[in-house]
Amino acid sequence: MDADLIIIGGGLAGLTTANRALELGLRPIVLEKGKEADYACNSRYSGGLFHVAFKDVTKPVEDIEAAVKASGELIPPHPGSDNVQSIMSEDAAKALAWLRQERGKFIKGGQPEFMRWMLAPPRPRGAGLDWKGRGPDVLLRRLTEALQKAQAAPRLGWRATEPIIENNCLSGVIADGPNGKETIRAPAVVIADGGFQANMELMQHYISPKPEALLQRGGGTGMGDGLRIAKTAGAALIGLDSFYGHLLGRDAIQNPKLWPYPVVDTIARSAILVDQDGQRFTDEGLGGVSMANAVARLADPLSSVVIFDEETWTGVAADNRYPPCMNPVYENAGGKVFSASSLDELALELGINADGLSHTVETWNDAVDTANFSNLSPQRSPQTFKPEPIRNPPFRAIPVIAGITYTMGGIAINRDACALSEVGDRIPGLYAVGSASGGIEGGKSSAYIGGLAKAVITGLRAAESIAKER
Ligand SMILES: Cc1cc2nc3c(=O)[nH]c(=O)nc-3n(C[C@H](O)[C@H](O)[C@H](O)COP(=O)(O)OP(=O)(O)OC[C@H]3O[C@@H](n4cnc5c(N)ncnc54)[C@H](O)[C@@H]3O)c2cc1C
Image (cartoon, rainbow, N blue to C red; front, side):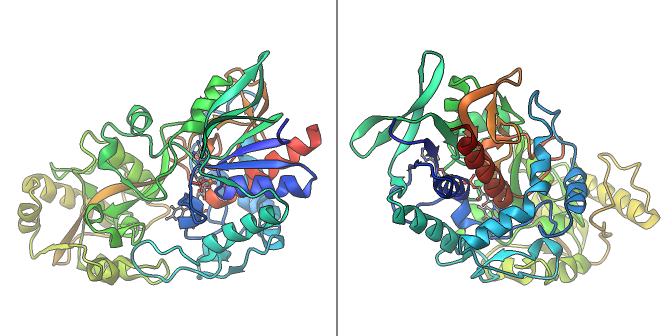
């Protein structure tokens, strides 16, 4: 055997698994398809907020668990998964402690609870992608340095493509390396490839009829190789129809300064999201991740617009607690906010149905005034985000695009991050961590629990399980 474990992917999930494995006396090999030392991945681009279900990870486990449960209805539990989602609350504080022990530096990023633990140094609160030398980049470099010191540096430019299965047992992977195809053997294989958001065929099958009309809001590296490898090895793939992402202004297609920030969510979850007929089509009260999924599922994902008024623009949109604020950041970075003194004029400018829009806004304002949302179709959940009326001119609009960060479904796992078959049997030697794993996030309302925490918690569990079984 070449190693005790092979890890496919050098994002936070893969590097966590590798470092923890080393600490436990194992010999890991990390295969990373990126060729440069600062290869793109979602972990490196992340905002660095370490939370579980938007809770401070040092809060009592029961509080975090309640927040996890309240995040939304998850897919039915996979056989053998044994309440896997609860590892997120049980291990939240342990994961933070481990990162700090690995020289991960944190600061308080802001007042809201989910900003309590932010990787330092933080990114500036402006528009666009800004990752070099920021907290998540620094953390990845530190985790990489620790592997280098132990002669276990990630093998850069290696893309795992297939499992090796001998006598019905997984015994390694085949990878395309700098010198062509190679065979690498180990008793355990950990899939940490970050999801399938960049694989247009899989995206079209599971996420959107027109995946090319979504914007990659991340490294764009997840091609679903891990899913294919796991499936060939007998693993079940679950909950593939949800993703973590945000609503972005559509101008982000041409203007790179408009992604991954600012996001349109804060406006949209207070106001309305309409289609070309001027009709609402989703429950805005479920938040930005849910709305981004709804937009992606439309026959034309480039057809929806957020409509709001002056009060929302100068209020919620300028709320400094959730930086960077759309107002003024979006326009300053070159994004267009449509503005008109009447709704009819606004509809004309946008090219959407004026009668439809006017009727939708009237019905909406009635619902907000009477605090009765049950007659709206689709319904509007008012509990989490306060709905605002659309009454004070100028009326405003931002055409949106669904920005996809990572797919939430993936390889079915149990509480030790071991991959499971369709009937819930363990696939000996196969593990899935981070965004490659399934069953922790997603479901009907695309419940988002926390990508960084999921990467570290599943990574630690995988390494510890492999060490125990050796
Ligand atoms: C802009 C942005 C902001 C975010 N903000 C936050 C935040 O504040 N808080 C939070 O909790 N989460 C956040 N996230 C999400 C979080 O970053 C991810 O959920 C997490 O980092 C996923 O880690 P991962 O290791 O599973 O995947 P990744 O970091 O994507 O790593 C996967 C790696 O696998 C490699 N790979 C893929 N296929 C192969 C193959 N076949 N062979 C070898 N290597 C392969 C890729 O090149 C990549 O390096 C954010 C993400 C983005 C993009």
